[in-house]
Image (cartoon, rainbow, N blue to C red; front, side, top):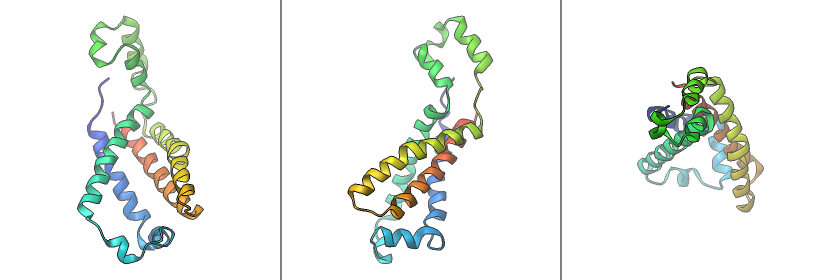
Length: 162
């Protein structure tokens, strides 16, 4: 089983697309500016090429790690020592992969893992930072919701794309 390097790149667009909708002024953008204690002018400052470029790059990193969180067959591959050891693997590994190599490789399964990653990983991290930064629960839930939605979609893409 080889890693799919294209799916994390495609999935990385998720954070940008969800962000364009989530933080649009007609959705949660106005609330975000208020809760972040920014002015509209301050929110428009900065090098947008750098901001969006780095967001995309970091989102590729997220997509790569989401593969290992959603695709259980990587665990079997790890048990034999990685991809370079496939030729040396015992016949039981080959039989396992023949029987279960595509088990749970669905968009639905990836979305489930992505949702739980957002809920039990991203939300606590954002909440901890928000508490120390004295941010409101609106702020914490707004950003956590964004990551739950984004990670759900990213998980679906990287797991279901065979």
